[in-house]
Length: 146
Image (cartoon, rainbow, N blue to C red; front, side, top):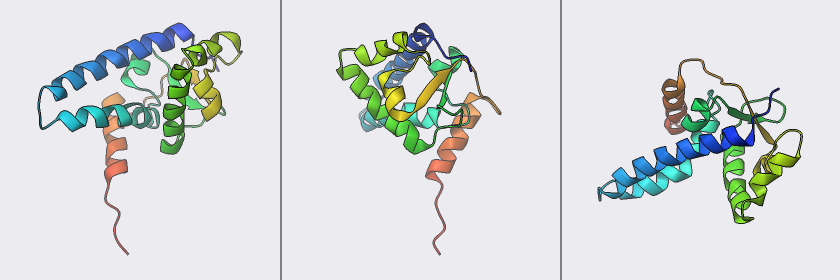
């Protein structure tokens, strides 16, 4: 596997930041959508990274994706572990991110904690937005009562 460089990951984070900021700004201007801005931040990365594409839109454009260290797709639980562990990487004054410069697999602190890697590969079956919508349908589908 070809592990993604910290520079590609940074580019992906910038793209995702721009997307989140734009959507949040639009939502914050509308009183009805105000709560959606906060909910979006909680769901954005885990939903995208646990989809079949294995990447947020920023990662997709940077041609990188997230997977388990054995190459498997992340479950939603794995994606949330990685998401919350990324807060630790940030709270260490960014040192959690810089760790990627000093290991062979280019893992950040949250990658190590969640047992994930970021690779230079795009997984796409039906397209980014179709895969994401399929993921949303799966997550919010009503389960029949027995």
